[in-house]
Amino acid sequence: MNESMRTTRTLILIGLRGSGKSTVGRLAADRLQGTFVDLDDVTPGILGRGTVAEAWRLDGQAAFRTAEAAALRRVIEDPPDVLALGGGTPTAPGAADLLTQARGSGSVGVVYLRAGARELRRRLESAGSGAESGPGSNRPSLTGRPPLDEIEDVLAARDPIYLSLADVVIESSGLTVSACADAVVEAARPGGNFP
Image (tube, rainbow, N blue to C red; front, top):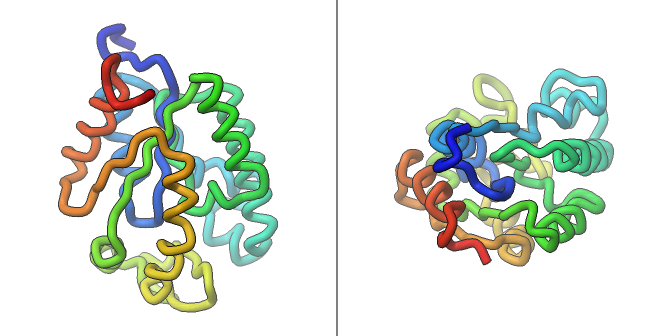
């Protein structure tokens, strides 16, 4: 990695589904000439499953959240430069404590990609993720309602959790993916927004 681009800590992206964690994370890692891991690619393997949707459907939410915390613990032991968490990872048993400990050690910086409910809905609709079945239905319902119908409730419940864990909040509504990635990279640089 080019030393002028390197950050001194792992950047962990949090936020609700549709906030851009995976897309922005990949681009930020590319710009930093670093490594990227999406926790949603790791968690299903803990349960012996191929996808989040399969793990959620066959093992249920409680088992998935436990696996998510185990995946986070595993990835933090040998962290990438940029890590995108699943939207619910901070609610998994012990995950918030892991993030708080890592923040306290100075080894990670947590970035909350925050978007309003209307923007999240627009993004999920354009990605085809609002249907209960069919193309784009890889995002499981969290409340028993279709994913597009639960956005406001899930955002209201999780926003305080995300805010309590974040070192930096990037308001992503109205920003392009490129502008979001630029903001993540800028926050990570020496003299950036991390404490």
